[in-house]
Image: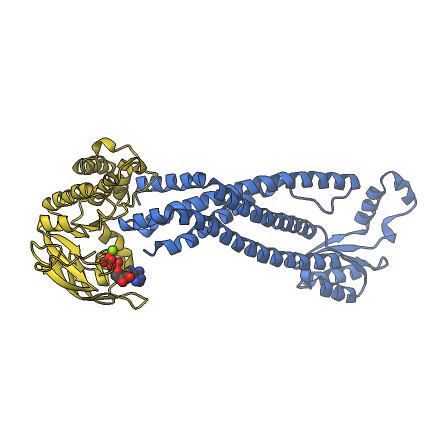
Length: 299
Length: 235
Ligand SMILES: Nc1ncnc2c1ncn2[C@@H]1O[C@H](COP(=O)(O)OP(=O)(O)O)[C@@H](O)[C@H]1O
Ligand SMILES: [Mg+2]
C-alpha cells in the first residue's frame, strides 16, 4: 500500500467519525462502559495479586520447639524441616533473638522482662513454602516432628484468598469476554448504520474497481479510532476514581494502624492497564467494522 | 474484445434472463444493445463486469476468461472497463474534479498522473470550467458528462453504458451519445444499452437486439427496429 493511499484511508476514517458524530458517540460510550467494567476487574485482581505477593513474602509459618528442647533436639527439628520437599526456606529464630524481639515489641514496658532471661522462650523456625496451596498438609507433617510444640500459620486465610482469586480471575475473564463481544456487536451495529448510509458510495467504488480492502480500511480506521477514544476516556475515568478510592482507603488504613493490606498506587499499574485498554478498544472497534461491512462488499 | 460463448443466465428466482448467447464484439467497435424492458440488456452488461456470473457458458473480456476469474481479481477487470449508468452514480459530497480523480485514486495512481489525466477527461466532456462544483449544482446532462469523464479517466479499453440517456431530455441525450461516439473514435470499444430509437437509427452503428433473453438480430449499420416492421411499436 502506498503512502498516499494510507493518507487517504486515514483521512476518510477520521472524517467519518466526525461526520457520524452521534453514532460515533454511541459507540464510544459502549466501549467506554465495557472497558470501565473491565478496568474494575483488572484493578481488583491487580490489588489482590499484589497483597498475596506481600503475604507470600512475609513469614508464612512459624514452627515452635518445646522450650525445654536441647540443642541436639533443635538440630534434629531443623534437619527435618530442611528435608521437607514442600519447604523453600528455613530461618532459625534463637531464644536470644526471640527475647530481643519481645523487648523491642514491649518498647517502654521492657522493664516487665526484668529478672527474666531468654531461657523460657522456645526456639522457632520461620518457614517459607514453595506453594501455599499445600500449607494444610505441611502443617500436619510438621506437627508430627518430635520436639515441635506448635505451628502457627495463616493457613486458612491463604487458602481462601488463593481460591477466591482463582474464582475472580475466571469470573472476570468470562464477564470481560462477554462484555467485549457485546461491544463488538453494538459497535458493528452503529457502524452498520454508517455503512448503510454509504452503501451507494460503496457500490460505486466497487463498480469503478476499488478493492475490498480499499473500501474496508476507512471503516476499520473509523472503528479503531472509536475504540481508541473509548479506551482513552475509560482509562481517564478509571484512573480518576481509582486514585480517589486508593487515597481514601490508604488513609483509613493508616488511621487503623495496619499495613496488612495495601492498595497499589495507580501509577504502579497504569501502564499495563493503558496498553490493555488500547489493545482491547482498538481490536473491538476494528472487528465491529469488519463485521458490519462484510455484507455490502458482495457487489 | 468481448466474447460470449453459449451463455445462459438464470436468476435465483428461476427467471431466464439470457439464453444461448453467442456474440463477439471486437476492439474499437460501437454497439447498441436494444430490446424491450426485461429482455436482458442489463444482465448482458452485468456479465461483462462480473457483477453476475453466467449459469452456463464462457465469457471473455480483454482476453481474460471472466466466467472463471477469481473474486479478488474483479477490481482489476473493472479498472479496464469504464461504466456509465442511467442514474449517474456520482458521489454527492465530492466535487466534479474529486469524483473523477477518485476513480484514479483507487488505483493508487501517482498524484502527477491524476493532475494530468483528470483535467484532460473533464476537457473531453466539456466540463473543465465546472471542476470545483458539486454534482447537485449540475444539470442531468452535466452530471452524466462527469460520469463519462470518470469512466474514461483510467483509459479503459471498453466503455459500457446502461441506458445513459434514460433520465435526459432528447437534446441532451444526443449530446451524451455524440460524446460516446467521440470516445469510440479514439479507439475505445463502446457498448450502449438504450431505448433511443432516433439516435440508434441515425448513427448507423452495429445493433444487437435482445428479445426475452435471446439475440434476435445482430446488424452492422443497423436500426432500432427490424427493417420492414417500421410500424410495429416497441417500448
Ligand atoms: N437480480 C435479479 N434477480 C432476479 N431477476 C432479475 C434480476 N435482475 C433482472 N432480473 C430479471 O431478468 C430479466 C432481464 O432483466 P434485465 O437484464 O434487467 O433486462 P433489461 O435491462 O433489458 O430491462 C427480467 O425479467 C428481470 O426481471
Ligand atoms: Mg436494464
